[in-house]
Amino acid sequence: GPLPSDFSEPILPSSKCDCVYFLSKSGSVLIRRANHGQFGEWKRWAVPKSIRLKTLTDVHSVKDSSVFGISAEGDLIEFNENGKNLRRTWRNHKHPPGNNRLAPFEGLAFVSPFVDETTATREVSIFLLSRGGDLVEFRSGGASSSSSSSSSS
Image 1 (cartoon, rainbow, N blue to C red):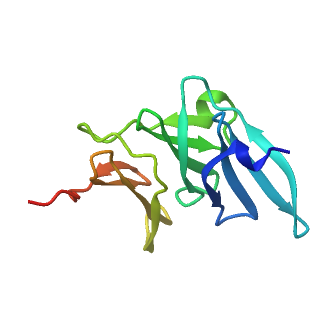
Image 2 (cartoon, helix red, strand yellow; image 1 turned 180 degrees about the horizontal axis):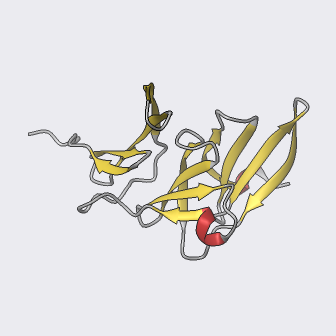
């Protein structure tokens, strides 16, 4: 298996399954699933050459099969474990409007306590920071910028 020096921080647990997600320093996503109370084998997902992941930011909060990361370019990247081909597995959500490239930090997910009666789903948001220090919200239906800023006058 991989050595501890092969990983980038943070290492994220899933809230949906007994597994832990890692980003290797070479840029691939590694998953280690539990098997009868013990950690089982490693699974490695190759990342397309056009995507350079810098950090993982959320595991399974928005969708049961989706992992989100931030690219070196500051874009939000979605990795769908159920994707049937490369195009369906990796999705670049780009960065929010304006010059709000995302900072490579772990996000904070919020799952709404309210269920949408028409779709029987809950809205989920991931709150992220831009490189300029602004708070950015990615909603399960798409991205939207929040108007919060870390700068003071």
